[in-house]
Image 1 (cartoon, rainbow, N blue to C red):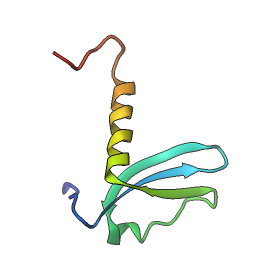
Image 2 (cartoon, one colour; image 1 turned 180 degrees about the vertical axis):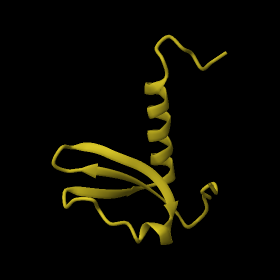
Image 3 (cartoon, rainbow, N blue to C red; image 1 turned 90 degrees about the vertical axis):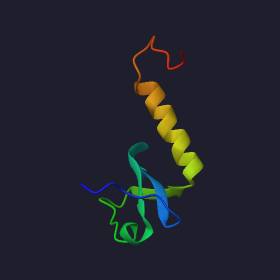
Image 4 (cartoon, one colour; image 1 turned 60 degrees about the vertical axis):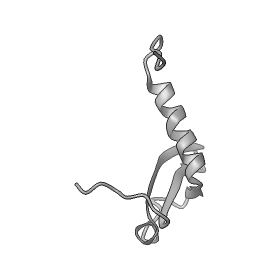
Amino acid sequence: MKPRREDSETRYFIDIDLLTRTVLDWGFDQRDKLVQHEPASSSHLRIYVTRGQFNKLEKKSMELSRPRGTCSEG
C-alpha cells in the first residue's frame, strides 16, 4: 500500500452521524480524492478541519488509548 502524502492539497476531516451524535471516522486525503466521497446516510456529515485541529484530535486519541499508568516522558 502506498503511503498517503501530506501537502498543500491535503484535506483533514471528521465524519459524524448527526442522529447518534457519534464520530464515525477521521482522516485525511488529497482534495481530488475527497470530492468523490458519498455519505453512507443522510444523517452523516463530513466536517473539514485544519491540520492543527486534526493533530490535536490524533494526540488526544493516542493519550486516551494508552494504558493507564504509562508515562511517555522519561
